Length: 164
Image (cartoon, one colour):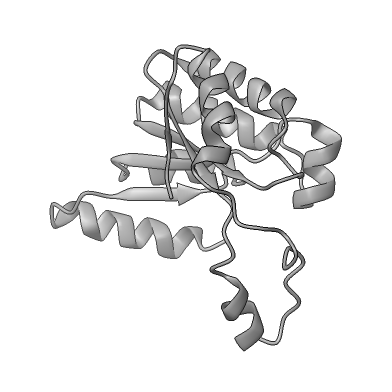
């Protein structure tokens, strides 16, 4: 959404020798992504859910462009870490985690996956903006509750960390 600004900022950082990281949900024009990647040292890439209809329902967009962009980043040779925000009852099913693991393993050897357990830290921000926080009733996940998803991801030969 802020491609021109991001490109300008990244270009400036690289001229100054600053290590750059793009944190993205991956929903971007492939042409813009290709331009931005010229100035990126690492991509933190969120993947939330692999079922197309569920992805569309939860995020408002189809997942195909996102998955294609993940493949393009790897093809460009830019290091990539897949991050999975785990939301209880939404995307933490074994089926979804296996699908993410399978996709990540298909990209190339050495892909790392970070599991980000749901927490409630953002509630006060929503409150201050007078916005509804739809996940208010969900409990935060503990690192222990992320052990099974971590093991599933590792079963694909991937490095997987729970980042709390």
